[in-house]
Structures are given as C-alpha cells and as structure tokens.
Amino acid sequence: TAHEGQVRNGSGGMPYVEHPVTVAAQLDEHGYRAEVLAAALLHDVVEDSDTSLDELREEFGNEVAGLVGALTDDESIDSYRERKAEHRERVAAADGEALAIYGADKLTNVTTLDAAYAEEGDSVRSEFKVPVELKLEIWEEDLGLLREKAPELPFLDELEVKLSRLRARLEAPAQPRG
Image (cartoon, rainbow, N blue to C red; front, side):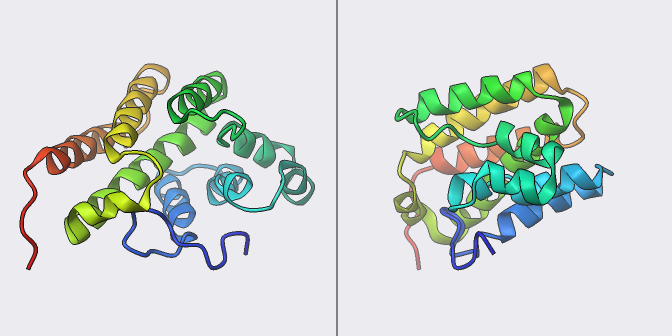
C-alpha cells in the first residue's frame, strides 16, 4: 500500500509496486529466505513513501528493517553521485543478503529501463532527475562492487550483459520513430 498510485520512472508507465515484486521474485528464484524476500519487497518503501524505518521495524522486525535500512538512500546527501557512493559503501559493509537484494534491484532497474528505452526511445530520459548516462555509470560501479564483495551472486553475468546492451542502446544514433 505504500507504493499505491506510484509509477516507476523509466518504466513506460509501470505501477511502482511491480519493481519490488520483481526484485523479490528474482531472489525467490534463487532460494533466498523469507526475511530477505520481505526486505526485497520493502526495499524502497522508506525512500519512496511516508513509511519510516521504525514503522517497518515494528511491523516486520529488526532483521527486515535492518536490510531495508542498508538499502535506503540517504536523501540528506544532495549530490546524486555522492549519495550513491555513500549508499554503495553502506551496502558493502552489510551482509551478503543485503548485497543480494542490491544486485537484484540493479538487475531489475537495468532490465526495466532497457525495455522502456526500446519501446519509447529517447523520450524515456525525461522521466529522470539525472542523466540516464549517469545512472548507467553508477550501475556499472555497483556491478564492480558486487563482483568484488559478492561474486557468488547468480545473476551478475546477466546484469553485466544487460548493462552492456543498455549502454549500446544509449550510445546508438537515435532512430526515427514510426
């Protein structure tokens, strides 16, 4: 309910809730525990709704709230690049389950943006507050962190392939639509 009525940026109009459901499904496919799946479903709630970490802790317990806390951007950091670097450092210091959610989140983000870009072309860029190329650069840095800290994650090769495909799509000359 925290994401009710929200639309995911760069998704072609996808209801926001589909993003965390996809992240959790990716982890469920690889046998992660129920607490990890719960945190995956809730990983953007604090960031993108009025729900607090204390409310999550009360409702879902310390473990789930701790994972969500590790996965929540520090919105007090204005610079997108600095905020993402701080977030990456915090996730790196967390356990492997936080890294797994983080990786599944990145894979879902890249997959969604690639599909929207294929469907809508350059117009999808207007849905973001920062340039898509900067997002891609950050995701590539995230992949580097994941390769270093959690090389056993089963979907890193897929993330790398999809990042490369998205980079190629963004760098290709714009094609006339129609």
